[in-house]
Amino acid sequence: MPLAQFLPANAFAALLIFARIGSAMMLLPGFGEAYVLQRYRLLLAVGISLLLLPILSPLLPAMPSSPATLVVMLGGEIAIGVFIGTLARMLLAALEMAGQFVSLQTGLSNAVIFNPMQAQQSPIPSALYSALGVLLIFLTNLHYVMLRGLVDSYMIFAPGKLPPLDDMSQTIAHAVAGSFQLAVEMAAPFIALGTVFFVAIGLIGRLVPQLQVMFVSQPLQIMGGLLLFALVLSAGMGWFLGAANQQFSLLAPG
Image 1 (cartoon, rainbow, N blue to C red):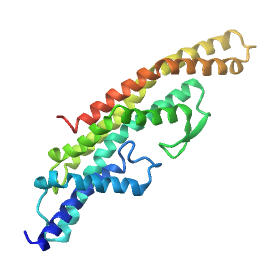
Image 2: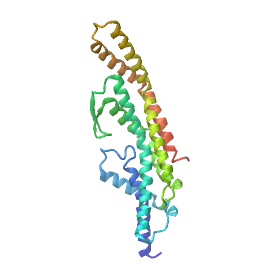
Image 3: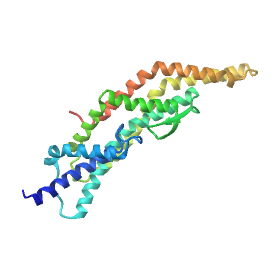
Image 4: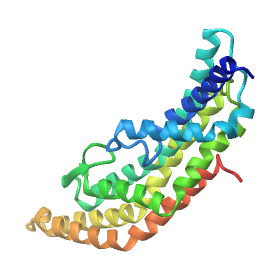
């Protein structure tokens, strides 16, 4: 192949791969966080795209003849990358919701701290869950499964073709529902304890009207919540890792 044809063909292939990899990198846990500098994220996406170029080149379509076709191809690859990144991002959203449930049940909703995952203030349980979730993903090497799923997505979504938008929208809807279910499951002990605690406080308030229930219940609520948090944190994060492994393995079945 002449050099004049070799360079444009490989540049097109690298651009097509980068469109999917780069758009997914914006949202993947750990890679797409607000504290990660954009230039580092860009360099990582470019490096991965170049590494995958000789592997994925046989799967890529030929370079289109019109700019409009090129724009359509790149738009489809970007949509697939955003779709994959959104599926992974739903897991961190589950941790954030679980932390919100825990903070409400333990009386820590007003105890806020800077959450580096969200780049804003959030309750302490939410910040802890979010940071610990990303840390465990990398400690347990689940990020390898995540990246492998991104590469194996080329076997599921043919490059250069419009993705099935109806199936993708249904998958996103199921992912949102699954994220909320995971958050409720992780916070279930706190919801149960909070329900029993508030019912007991209500009965005490009716039986002893002279008692200042708020002054008595607040320290007990916080101490009981922290004790339960210490007891179930390990099990809750293990539950999260199981859901994350299942989610990432959907795109990396091998």
